[in-house]
Image (cartoon, rainbow, N blue to C red; front, side, top):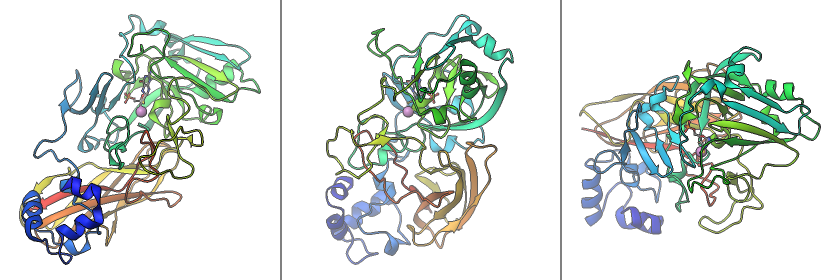
Length: 430
Ligand SMILES: Nc1nc2c(c(=O)[nH]1)N[C@H]1C(S)=C(S)[C@@H](COP(=O)(O)O)O[C@H]1N2
Ligand SMILES: [Mo]
């Protein structure tokens, strides 16, 4: 049925549903059996839309492959080489994401643990008056103010699996995001100490992780950004995560944290920041890498990305953390308490809404203010159900400029960035 809908949603819709609300013939058997329930709001299901229980894998009946890494909760395995793992949405309920629940995104190999973390060095050079070399020990010493912030970090490809047609890369759901409490020095303070030259307009980041091929000349990833973001007071060179030394897999002993922008700008195992007079051209820069179309392109088409723009502030998104897709609830359940988090890149979240009737009516949830700038925001609220049956909880955040999550992933691009469609969790009552 998924294939049928993918090929021609309107036609499959006509085949599956007779008059809206009544499933026809074989479709009644297969869809009804697959859903295991009636659909009280069937007449409100938008044309061409396959119920989420069939469209998205649930943990019931062959869910995603899980992985148990050392010191980690069970995560969704996205790939072993390089090692990538996603946090199940329901594990994102903590205000501060604990280390064991943090998603893992690597482009190369995980380096060896440093034998003497305090002697680890970072270099700042290029378009500066006085190149700097500092050890972790010096950064801890208080020469530069240490600040502690809760900062959301989201992979540029978060939500990629919702693109149609499928795009290259890890097929993340909504769980390539975290909001840990980071302690470090402001990159701005280090740049000030080095003395930015007039021509210092961009950064280029380097880390110690070996390229997958083992070739020492090649970088696993080396991205960079406009200097405006580098001097943002919440862009940190971090030495602690949640009050502890940074875990190896998350970049020990030193990492950049660039909140609100693609996670790839938060270089782990940080060794160097090169200040440049032109956009950095390291691994993961240019072409279709972390770049999105300015004018929409035909989904599935080829494009060299030369007209694309850099993916910078991430778009608004929300997660539902107390109810998972595919949950079965006892007969007679007539209300659902919902809660989760929402965030919006450099912006804040203005509102979160939820619907249980396929988006016909929406209920506004309560949205808390962030603990500090760039922390994600808690949302919570209640929705009512009219009867037993199959429902979908749709949840949708709106940013402080009034931009909402769209109904389907928009602005398709070859590497699948910026998908932030409304999420749907299938619920069966009774
Ligand atoms: N050195 C290095 N830094 C890196 C990466 C990497 O592969 N190597 N991956 C980046 C990407 S794409 C993301 S989304 C974040 C993920 O951080 P985490 O693994 O700590 O969750 O780290 C970024 N920093
Ligand atoms: Mo990423």
